[in-house]
Structure formats: structure tokens, C-alpha cells
Length: 437
Image (tube, one colour):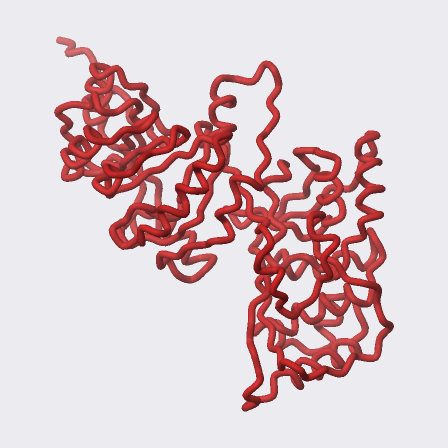
């Protein structure tokens, strides 16, 4: 598995300390060809959350590897968190008391898991139930109702905590630990703490691109600095994913993800790599979970994304919208491909009019899903045409366009000398028979 696919920022880190000496030792062993057990990741259908193997992943990065052996399991981020809290009890680097406290408090701060008994949490975290009881009491003292000094905050791992500034909490009756450090090699010289620190806000985020599946060979990566959409398309797969994993699909900017173009390493391809791999390995589909140019999106969000694009000329960024009129006045970076979706005939003329005024290195048309016959008068303003069917979602059944609809677009694309790409979900093809007697 590509290291860049693995997410370590979802609160799955069970350690309070990443031992840099161990990381360096592992990295040296990896360079010499030593085999390590595969790390454990949980795949929610979109992201791969690391649940076991933080030292190994850090070492692989130090060794400048791009891939690592992984045991891929189906499950949500929460499944990865729960697995991680007891993962190192019997193998790997010996857990410190700080590690055990971190595991227990992760469960005690969760609205669902905090309802479990001390013994159940102890079993999950592989600790003594008395440790759980002591930490539960400590947290309850810090959450005293009505205390005007109480502050609730979410740390960089997504854990919600309650703090009373200036109030020292009693320590549970377990051994003191050594200095604590974060889970990324870039952070090893910065003390780790659950309390918010000003310097943490200024530090660069750890966000990277997400790897697409093999069906998207023209773009290996997705990047979602903005999520959410208000178009309300019945066939929207992104809304299904968002509702499943976040519970909402409202437009939202994620400033921490703006660093992803700089954080993601370019893949190293073999000398005999195919043309598709050479192209796709550098291409990033932007906002697969949003329409960045929807009428509701603030211009500042768009400007922030485009600024990150201009600072990353090593990547090619692919933009797609159902609101092409908003693309006209943008000074497009050279490393941007710009496209519009035409799924019904009512969008056809608007797409032609807008793209006749757009200056971009690649301008493309996406007819996916092709829901009805679409009549184009001219496609010369496009460089590339994609055609696809409709996959099943919660709001719409699967659907295949008629071959005549596809053939008409294909003919006009050929006349305009456009490159053409049939999506893997397009099954339409000629089914003609001789007249016979």
C-alpha cells in the first residue's frame, strides 16, 4: 500500500510517545531489507485509517519508502480507533503508562464508549480496571457543571476534551512517564499534550491527497479542501458517502487540507510505466465531494484552493463543476484542467457558451451520468470528452444511456478533434442486426 494513502490524523494514534530511536532503528533495518509485520488499516470505502503500526509507518517515511505492507480491513474510522487502543498490548514497542492513559481517555471522552463499564474499557485497552476508574474520576472532576472556567476544545486528532484553566487535576495512581511526543517525525522535538498550545495552531498540517481506486486511471488522487454541495442531484454518490460518515453534506472549508499538495510525495514510476500511469500519477481530482464553483461557495474558499494549486506545479489539478459560468473570469494556472458536467440537455448550451470564453491548458466535458439525449451544436471549445453511465445511489437506480445518445456525442467530439474517454461504468454499445428477409 502507498504510504500516502494511509491516514494517521483521525484520532487512531494510541501512543503518547513515538520513540525516535526505535523509528531510526526500524528505518535502518528496512533499508537493509528486513521484513516487518504488515501494518493494520481500516478502509471505510474512502480513507485508510492506520490502527496499528505507527512506528513502522514513521520508519518507512524516514527510509524514503513510498509503500508498506498492510493488512487492509473493512471498517470505519471508529473501528480503527477501537482496535488501536489495545493493539500494542502484546507486541511491538512496549507501551508506557502514558500510552495506556491515552488509550483509556480516548474511550472515556467518546459519548458512546464512555457509557461502557470500567471493566469493558479496561478489556478493550488491555489495562487494569482500576486505572480506568481513576481516569474516569479525573475527567469527571474536570467537567464539573456550572464552572465558568470550563473550556471544551477539540485537539488536532479530533478528540474532544474539557479543561478548566489553572486547575490542576489529580493524577491516577500509576507510574510517571517520560517526555511525551507527537506521532509524526516532524513533531518529535515538540512536547505532546492534550492541552491546546499556541504553537500547534501555527504548525503545518499533516493532510495528504487520497488515493483513488483503479477505475480512475486518469487521476490517482483526490483532494477535498472543500466538501458539501447544494445542487441536490438525486444520483449524487458524494452525498451518500458524506451522510454515512459525517452525517451532513453542508458546504465546508477544511483549511488544514490546503497543505496536502506539499505534503504528498510524488510517486516514483518504473521506466516502463504506461502512458496512463504517467499521466494519472500526477493528476489530482479536486473536490470530488463538492462543487467548488457552486453559487453558494464564498470566493475566498476558491481563492485559497487556487493559491495552493499555483504553489504546487508538480501536480496537475482537475476541476469539475455544474456551474461553468463561474469559471470564465478566473486566471487559470497552467497546471489546472477545467471541466463541466452536462448530464441533461438543459446544460448543453450553457456549457458551450461558458467554455468558449475560458482559457485553460485543458478544457473538458463530462457527460456522466448521461441521463438523456443531449444535443450539442459544437464541441470545438473542449479538448477532452468523457461519457459515462449512472451508478446506483440511495436516490437513484443505475442507468445506462442508449447507444444512439453516446454515438451522437462521439461523432461531434471526433469532428472537433477532441480526445474521448468512455468511463468504466458505460456499457452502451451498438446492438444492430441485419434486416434479413
